[in-house]
Length: 142
Image (cartoon, rainbow, N blue to C red; front, top):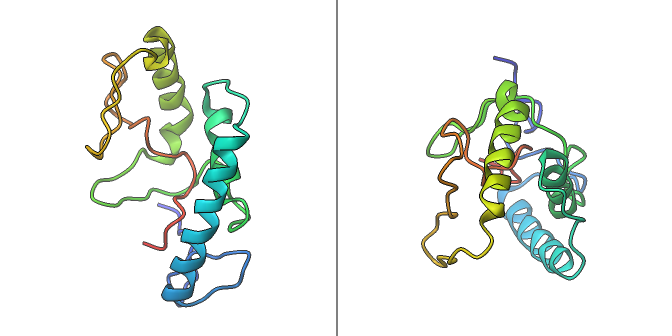
């Protein structure tokens, strides 16, 4: 497995455009910057194509002020509680997932379940990768 190029090898904090090197200042800046980016994204959304480039464009808009690699498909395996989609499967899995979502009319007209912590699932989406996972390296230091 390739070495993770995203974090600083000494601090473990994701290499960032702001040069922040402590957990406290990094988490604070990331929270403020991504909060503002999400507001701007809501006001001026990415033109919807509902495919991997669309998801990457959203990732770039949210994290682009923080990371050089924002919006790029990640090159290493990452995990939080569970292992996320392996990088070698992101393109094929996202194509399968978006095809399934297209067949489900992108879940339009479905009830939104707020506060449950889980995205609505497409009945026909493949199980090997979660459509809620971003294809890029997540913008967190963990």
